[in-house]
Structure formats: structure tokens, C-alpha cells
Image (cartoon, rainbow, N blue to C red; front, side, top):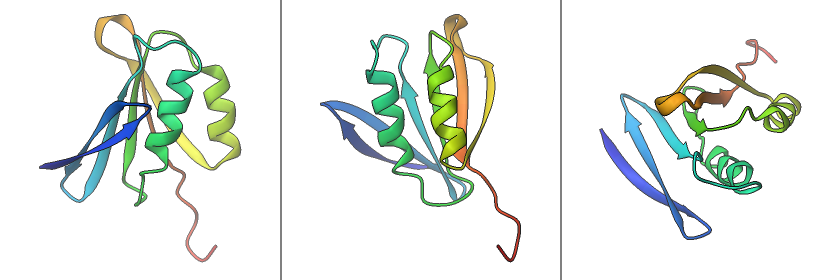
Amino acid sequence: MSNAIVTHDNQALRIFVMDQHMEIPVDARDMQPPEPFEATMTALDQLKDIDDEVVLWIGRYPEPLFNVLRRNGYQWAEASGPEGCFEIRIRRKETPSGS
């Protein structure tokens, strides 16, 4: 596993490269709006392959984010994250072959 650093408004986002896919964590638990949205958008810009994903930890349910993800061709999975927060795993939506 290797990693790289991407910055967003003086905050570092660590990118983990694991077995041919990238995982970009965004810990937004202590951020105030609109910082979680902005940090997530910055991280999504780093996705290169269909298997790459952003892992967002956030203390409130990000319904506005889901609307943007839906409109822009992303899929996500929701789970309980550390310390009672939401964990949202986001990746590009797979398109059918030949499209």
C-alpha cells in the first residue's frame, strides 16, 4: 500500500492506494458546512478508476450531497462509522458495456 497527500483549503487528504484501487478518506466529523461538501468534491476529483472510492465520515446525514452525487453519476453505500457517525463510500457508477 502506498499513499499520497492532496490538500483542500490547507487540510491534507491522504490517498491510500490498495491493490490497484485508491481509497480517499474524508474525515468531516469536525467540519462545519460547507466544508464537508467541499472536501468531498475535492476528493471525488481525485478518483481515476471505477474501483476507486472516497470514504466520508460525517456526523450528520448528508442528503444534499446525495442529490449532487445522483445527478453526477456516482453511487454510494452507507454504514455506521466510528463514534456514531455516518460512513459513506462513494464511487463512480458503473456503466453497462458498450455505452
